[in-house]
Amino acid sequence: MQSSRILVSNWRKSIQVHVNKRNLAVNGHLNGISPGVLVTNKTFTFDRPQQQQTQKRWSTTTSAAINASNNNNGVGVNEKLAVKPSPPKHDWDRAVSEAERIVGYPTSFLSLRWLLSDEIANVALYLRKLVGSSHPLLKTAKGLLYNGKNTMQAWGLIVLLISKAAGHAPSVPDMEQDKSAGVLHSQRGLVEVTEMIRISHLIHNSLVNLQRSTKASQDSASYDDMTFGNKIGLLIGDYLLSHSSAEMANLRNQVVVEMISSTVRDFSESEFIGERDEQNNPLPSRPGTKPLQQTSKAISTTDIDFCREDVLKPMNIYKYLGDPEKEWEARNILNVGSLLGKSCSASLLLAQQSEELQKKAYLFGKHLSLAWQACIDAEPFQLSSLPYDTTFSLVSAPVLFHLEHDPKLYDEIEKGKVCVDNVDYNKIHKAILQGPGLEKTKQLQRKHTTAALKVLESFPNNDARKALENIILAMQDL
Image (cartoon, rainbow, N blue to C red; front, side, top):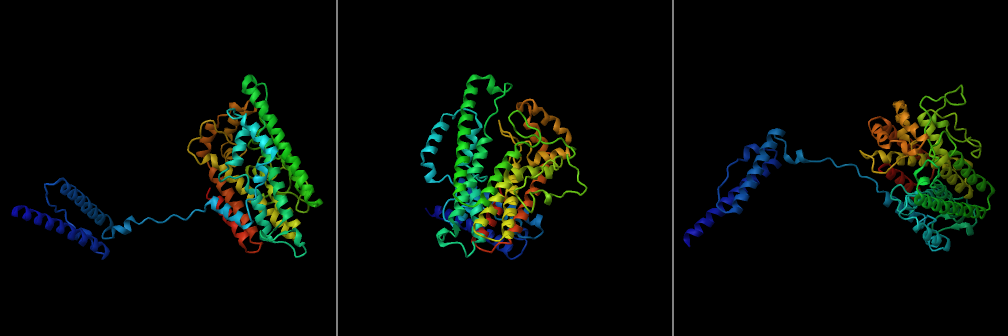
């Protein structure tokens, strides 16, 4: 009994020696003393397995301390292991939810009153019949409901935020004002019109061109699915477009009607630019193509826009074809920038703001939409390999920039003129990752992001302007 007490006492003393030495080593680090002087590799041998684990941990710790001392020449381990904190990223979902709180409630026309309507219920019933097919309409519908960060529904939110940031003239009647949200009822109606036109355009683009050379036309089952999907897509798009026309007439403002109607014209013009494949997907211009109309003065990217005096006049895009950045901007101003920019301008017109501020709103919407599109174009190239059965636009910014760097890649893209299935997207994807196209696209996004933030400085500093800035910063982190 006495011998066992002596063994336990010696064991406790040994553990205390280890603890004291370990504390001394740590204190030496904190006091700036080299730990190699204080820590030794001396260990005690115990019979118990637990004691052997203690020895192993203590030996590993002391060895690490000595190595740290040799590597740092006396600098503390805490300094060596200190990691520089990464800059905080802006949360997209949080930025959007805070912005919706500022303007009152969710802004999308896909609200409860729409989802419970008979028309939308019938549409959902027919869309269920397409499940299992490969019709592009399903992908578009999924993007509308489960949109994630590249949301299709945030356009109306942007228009309402710029409206609240600018405010309205004192002459606007009280009956027209939504004082709880700080916007006008007519501006909310314009927001619904904007989103309906945008979504109808996306749905119409989901239609499949059933040529004889395509696989769908050769397979009877696929042909029936594609035909049915085309009918549903055509009906949905036409319904939204016609309903938006009725809502736009209720605004009772002829200038706004003309301005928003011109965006539908711009959508149509964007579908007839350059060459197309069998599915009407756009193909880029051959590198080195000279513009159809030569100008004596060099054209900068700031000149690519509608007429400054009259934005209702069509834009002559053909003088920009062949130059990657100019061609991309011209295509996407017609396809996305026109609607968002003119909607922001029309919203301030309804608020009876000055013409100068209306032009600022148009420029903000245009630059924001271009930065948004550059972000979407770069998304497929963030991965090292292209996922299975995934494609991307052949007139996206990375592709156009890479064609300027490597014109030989156009031979692969040109195969799509006969059949879109002949294009090897994996080959194009790998080539772009090895070239400067992705980096130039990021620079293009930063360029338009900076331009949008600069225009935003012309508006009063309030919560709505801050929400717009947060959305732009969150978009940069996508």
